[in-house]
Amino acid sequence: MKEYTIAAIPGDGIGTEVINAGVEVLKVLEKHDGGFKLHVKKYDWGSDYYRKHGIMMPEDGRDQIKDVDAIYFGSAGDPEVPDHITLWGLRLNICQPFDQYANVRPARLLPGIEGPLKGVTACDLDWVIIRENSEGEYAGTGGRVHRDLPEEVGMDVAVFTRVGVERIQRFAMDMARSRPRKHLTLVTKSNAQRHGMVMWDDVFERVKADYPDVTTDKMLVDAMTTRMVLDPKSIDTVVATNLHADVLSDLAAALTGSLGIAPTANLNPERTFPSMFEPIHGSAFDIMGQGISNPIGSLWSAVMMLEHLGEPRAARKLMVAIEHVTAAGDVLSKDLGGNATTKEVTEAICKAICGENA
Image (tube, rainbow, N blue to C red; front, side):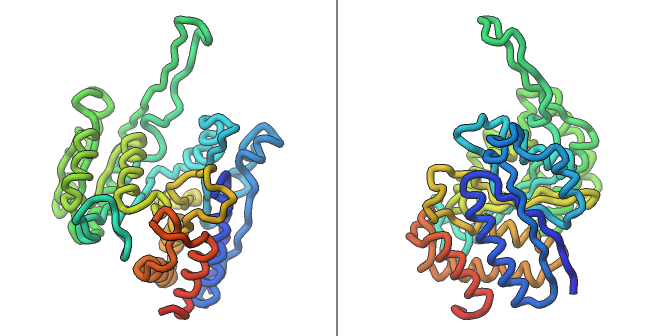
């Protein structure tokens, strides 16, 4: 029997609720599958830790988790702590040093879920957005001078390297090649940003020559938002910079019904460091503690984690259980038009895994 060590970091807000739900479902899946065992260790890092210690995670935090098989993350963000502290102190403090450069965000209409686009079906909206996750607009390069003076200047510099751009484009090409349509769209803003974005275009022209079986096109990021709304069936796999894909993937989640169902994998494809899996939705403090958060984003992220661990059978079983519950439509959370609690959705998915409501 294979055994895996998982570092669970609930983080802030509803992160605790959805990670607890995910761990509960994974334990049921582990028992029902019988082919693997998970050793889950939780870490109390986040804004509460910051209030006690002045940092979001211990200075040796990465050393504590560097040898785990995967990281299961909830969210980072607290209304009482500045956003740049929560993000850079926790999530990016793990992603970037662990070189999790490939952020993978699938977006599709689950059975029984209607998105806001009239007449759009699951066949029309089935995308994977690949986000460069280690540099670009979130490289952290810049600074502020003359603080609190009229001439104060703040500067963030986007950093694009040939290595970083080429490796994410090749990863996206491989992803597109693995999908039935074998089509990849490159998104930049190279008409206005004439250095780094033009380099993205130039590298893409070289990379695509090695993938003759993958069809490609290019879009400017503003035009891409329009295309996502007006012509979703023309899109399959998308690759974009850190900032652009961050924004596009949130739009994609909304178009599939709710940010509450959207998953993310932060991958270190070479597996020199552990990869991290998390829902898109953030900390959602407005509903924290009410027991109404949607656990599906966390559970779909667990599907991606199981796939990464080499457990495709268990991953498929969990995804089928999620789709069974959404298709039935009688146990849906508030963001999907229902009134079910986090606990009720979690229990329904556990029952589907065990075949009790099949």
